[in-house]
Length: 371
Image (cartoon, rainbow, N blue to C red; front, side):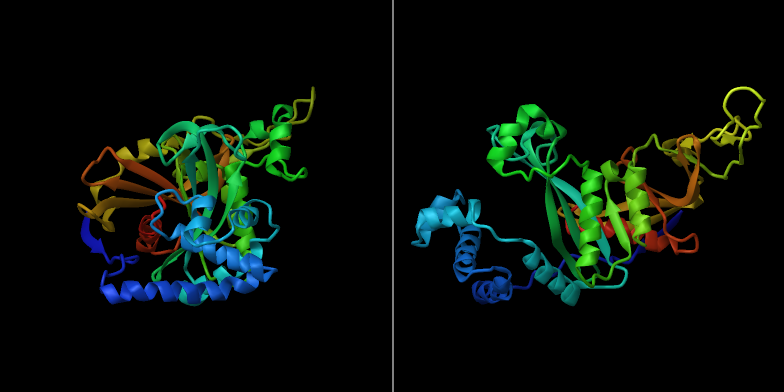
C-alpha cells in the first residue's frame, strides 16, 4: 500500500479576517447585490429583494417576511406580495451568478456537484410537502426536498441552481386542489430526482460558459444508469457513488444472438455466450483486492483532524440488464479509522487517466459540504 498522502486540492480557506474586515462585509454585500439588480424587471422588486436579503442575514430569531418588514420599517403586505405573488424570473439572476462563478472559480477540470436537501414541515399545504426521505434529519419525515447543483474547483465552491422535487402523489387527482392552490403549472409532470438533476446540469451548460469536466453525485443518482448515460452524452465524466450490490465484470464477457430454431419468434435479445461467467458485486471485489492495489489520500480537514481514506481504482465492465455495458472505473474508498465504512463509485473517465486524479473528485465534493 502506498503511504503517500495526496496533496490537498480543495483546501479550506484560511480564517484571517479581522473585526474591521467583518464590518466591511456589510458594504461588500450591498455592492454585490447591485450586480443582481438588473435581474429584476422593476425597481420596487429590486428594493424588496434587498430588504429580504438583509432580513435573512440579520440576527432575527425567526426570519419570516412579517418580522423582516417590521425590522426594516417596510410595508408588511408589500414584502409578502413580493415573496408570494410578484412575478419575476430567477433565470436572469442565475445567469448573472453563474457568470461570477466562472470568473472567480472557473477551471477547465471543475466539478459539477449534485445533491439534495430537505426541510421538515409541520403542515400539509406547502408545495411539494410529503412524507419522504429528509437528509437533514436522516429519516423519512413530512418535508420539502430540493435537488441542488453546485460547482467546485481548486479555487473554491458555489451553489449554481436548484429545483423543488414534487413527490409522485402530488400529480394524483387527490392533490389537484393543492396543486392549484400552490400555483403548480398545469403542464408540469412528475420527474425523478435523477431526471431533475440531469435537467439542471444541461440547463447550466446551455446558460453560458461553464468550464467543467466532472459531475459528482451520491448513490441515488449513481444507481441510475439513465443519469450516468445522460452525463456522458453531455461530454462530461461522471464520478458517482453506487450501491454495494452493484454488479460488474473484470473482463468483458462475449455475447451472441441465439440461433433461431425454426419455431416461435426469432431471437432479438443478446445472450451471454458463457452463462457460467457470472458477474460479481463490487463489495465482493473489494475484499479480494491485494494490499498493493490501495493508495492513501487525505479527503478533508475535519474538526477532529484530517479525514484519511484508502482508495483502490479498478477497470471494470458495468452490468446492464444482465449484459455487459460500458467499461468504467470502479473506485473504492475505505475509511482507515473505520474500515467498515466503504463506499463505491463508478466513473467513465478515460482508461489512461492518472488514478490520483480520480481521488480528487470526492475530495472536491467533501470540501463543498456535499456528501
